[in-house]
Structure formats: C-alpha cells, structure tokens
Length: 211
Image 1 (cartoon, one colour):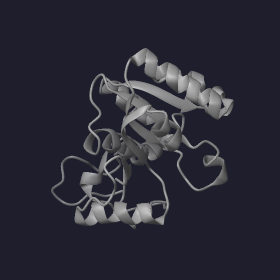
Image 2 (cartoon, rainbow, N blue to C red):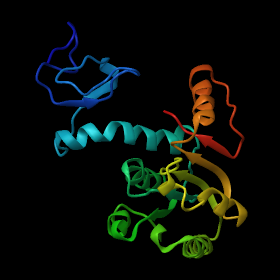
Image 3 (cartoon, rainbow, N blue to C red):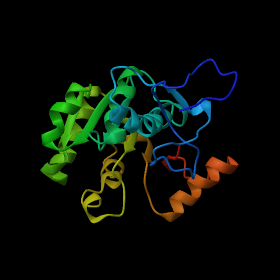
Image 4 (cartoon, rainbow, N blue to C red):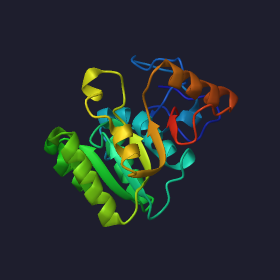
C-alpha cells in the first residue's frame, strides 16, 4: 500500500510476499512489516501460494542448512514429506545434493516422487512394513541416515502411532541428529533459550528446530 520515503526497491502497488515480525499477526487487510522481511512476489505464484511459502520455506532451508548443514551425498530421512514444510524440504535437500527417503501416505506418493524423493515409505502400511522399507532405502544408499527431519512430531494420538525416533535409533538406521519442528513444553523452552540467548541445551543428537 505504501513505502517509506527514499526506498527504490519497492513502489506502491507492487505484489510482494514475506513475513511479519514475531508476535505480529498477518491475518488482516493491511500489515506493516520491515522491508528486509518482504520480497517481490514471483509472477508464477498465486497470492495464496505466496502467502503459504515463506514460513515453511524458511523452516526447511534453515533446518537443513544453517542448523544441520546437510551435505551432498548425505542421506536425509524426511517424515511428513507431503506436508507444508516437508514438500519444500524435499526440494531443498535435492538442491543440496542429498539423497532423500520420504515418509508419507500412499495417496501422496506420486507428488512426493515428483518433487524428487529417491525412496518412498508408506506410513499407512504399519510399523513392521515401515522398518522394512527404511532398511531397503539404507541398503540401497549404502549408509544410514545422516539426518532425520520429523515434520509430524506432536503429542496428538494420530502422530504417536508410529514411534519413528525409537524405530530408527534402536535399529541403527540413523547416525546423525533427529530434528523435529514440534514438541512438548520442555523442548520449546530449550529452543527459546537457544534462539534468544544462544545456549544449546539440547542433547547433541536431538533438537526441536525453531527459525
């Protein structure tokens, strides 16, 4: 709607997308946000797509690069691969040169495969079948998972049906960190301390990632 005097990057009427500062809502007709938190909306994105992309995109990029430095040739286990963060994380991981084993439902397997996943695991098949499929992926890549990004972890009953973390740890399928984007109060407190004070109180092989 308007830009500060002297700004040449944007002009009134530009189509933009981005984020607003912490504790500021964006569900409104007009919002005020710093210029460094917005960019010109890509022409091929609808406004709905552009509105959905920044938070999940930043989460995926930072979780895989700034926090955990996923490298070319490494093996990522991505749980919740067809969700908001997950479907972006596939593309980020492939752009980084990683191999991706993606956990999703069978009905979303075509989408996840199209986005670049190397191996698919159907979580609706049950715990025994999931372990078998993970074993196959690890054998084909020739190394355990270097990183697990769990995009579905929560304390809701539907998200607790498959004990993914114990499944990969107890079967030596994961040699790196287990990262979630959700969790209980203790994990959020640890994430808050690290984000605001810089102290990492998480164990070395697990964390809740907060952008």
